[in-house]
Amino acid sequence: MSLTCYATFHESPKGPGDARRTARRIIEDEGLGNEKLKNKSIFITGASSGIGVEIAKAIFLIGATLFLKARHIEKAKQALGEELTESCRVHLLEIHLDSFESVRTYGFETQFGTNQLGHFLLFALLHAASRGANARAIFVSSLGHRFGNVNFHDYNVESDDNAYDAWKAYGQSKTANLWTANEADRRYRSHRLCAFSVHPGGVIETGLMQFTSNEWKQQAITNPVLGPRLKTTEQGAATVVWAALSKSLNGIGGKYLEEVQIANPWNSEDGDWGPGYGSHAYCPDKERELWELSLKLVGFKG
Image (cartoon, rainbow, N blue to C red):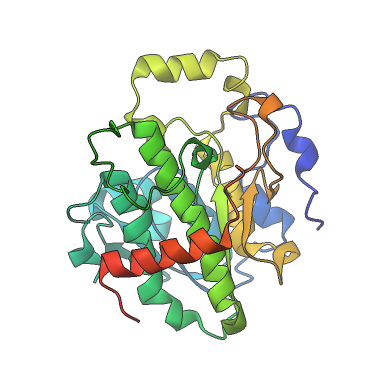
């Protein structure tokens, strides 16, 4: 299948449940159902709610062995259902990405600590196991990366002249995810590991939206620009599954993906909620600087 075969489904979105693909449909389109990839092992974070659950349910269909990270095992079991949780191919792991002790974030701004440092440390500990395996690492970023760059001098948002702004903090953490994917791809491509960052789309129950008020959510749903772009969790999982499994991405890496395709630059004429990556999305020098800073902050020397 071509890299742009899903583009037409996203040209005129009509809201959650429209014709845009779901994660399970991606599996079908790729011809990967009926346990076609029994030799694969896949690690998924956030498997107790939101798109993480739908990603796990879809990828389970390919026959892979799944390692599913969850903060609360019982909650994950309820969300995933008996078919997955009783399978010998599914392993639930209780890991708290905001606590370095359980991964191998204490004292860091919550979004930067969890979204960036927790996932960075987990990747740093796991990537060696994938050497030579044609592996892919998928970092869930967001359109929100456009709302905030990484402030290397105040990543904890502590300075008196930098009043805390949740959207900017979220944007910083999602820019960090995007940059980490780019740098991981650059560093480990020779080890047959490719990395991508993904904007899954606007899903009300996930990301920063889960911390917004009901009033804000209702405004988002009824907004004539944002509302039609919102997705179900099944649709939100689609681009992540495509990034992880699509044969059309073989030999490619270091790209920001959205709407089940490689993203283009953001056009300001499309508004704040329009598609595309920000002007700071690809910046090798800052990506390298963030990588070195992240290594230092998590105390990882390898």
